[in-house]
Amino acid sequence: MAGEQRADGRGRVEIEGLSVGYGGRPVLQLDELTIEAGEFLSVLGPSGCGKSTLLGALAGFVSVDEGAIRIDGRDVTRLAPNHRETGLVFQSYALFPHMTVRRNLEYGLRIRRLPRDERNERVRDALRLVDLEEFADRAPKQLSGGQQQRVAIARALVTRPKVLLLDEPLSNLDAKLRRQMRHELRELQREVGTTTVFVTHDQAEALALSDRVVLLAQGGLEQLGTPEELYRSPRTRFAADFVGAANVVPVVDGTVLGAPMIGATAEADAVALRPEHLRLVAAGTGRVPAEVLSVGFAGERYEYRVRTADGTELLASPPDAQHRIAPGAAVGVDWDDDEPIVIGGR
Image (cartoon, rainbow, N blue to C red):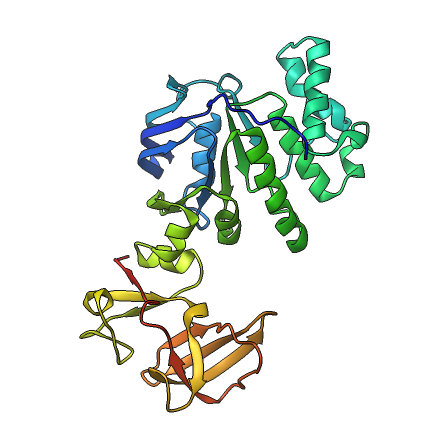
C-alpha cells in the first residue's frame, strides 16, 4: 500500500469519569482511559458490555451523562460529530450505493467546502493508500466485500481525522478474507499513523491488530494491556476465559485437580490452564488421570474434551497432532510447572 507516514503526533484521547446510560440505566462507566497518539487500541468484550456505546460516545452519536472526552486536550464531550475530527467506519460500511467510489470519498470533503483541487488531491491520495485507484469510477455493488471495506476506510481517512473509529468493520467478511484484511488494516494504520479505536467481539482480531486492548465486561473496564499481557497474565476469571480459551480450576490445599502445585500457584485461589498447554499422555502417567469425551481435528492439532476423575471437564489442544486419541480412551493430563496462570476473582 502506498502513502506517507503522518508523524504530527495528533490524536491523543483522554477519557475521565465517563458515564453513559439509556433510560436512566448506566451501561458504560469508565473512570479513566488514555489512548496515545498513533496508537491502535482495540475494544473487546461480549455483547452488551458497552463496546459500541464507547465508540458512539467518542464519535458524538451517544450522549454522555457524566465525565469528559478530550482529543489533544480539547474537550469534545458536547460537540457534534462533525466538529470532533474523528472518522467512523460502520460495520455495514454505509457506502452510498448511487455514488461511485470517487464520489463516496468526495462527499465529506464537499460538505466541508474544500476547493476542487484539494478534493481531487485528497481522493487520489486516499485511493492510492488503499490500492483502489483503478476502481474510482465503479459503484459499490461492483466491488468485493474486501474492496468495499477499503473504500469505507479511505472515505473516513480522506477527511484526515485525528482519530479513526472502526465498528467491527471485518465482521461481514468470510474467514479467509478477514485474516487477510487484518494484516492490511494494521499495515495501513501504521503507514498513516492515525490514532485508531477498533471495536470487536473477536479476541483473535484484537490480539492480532492492537498495540493495547481494552477488555470490557458489564459496562466497566475489566483489564487494559498489551495483547501479550491479556493473554499471558489475565487478572480475572473472566479475562482468562474470554481472551483465549482457558480451563479455570480452583487451587485446593496447594493442589489443582489433586496434583501438587509449586511456588505462587500453590498459594493462589485459582489458576487458568490454557488448552494448548495441556498434554495428553499415556494412562497412568502425567499429573491427572482422565477420560477422553470427544475429539475434533483443527488442522495443526486435535482439540479434546476430557473429564478427570473428580468430574472436572477440561479442554486440551496439545501441539502434537501426529496421532488421534479416540473418545473413551483413558489418558493422563500433564503440563509444565510454569504453565498455570494465577488469576484473581470474578
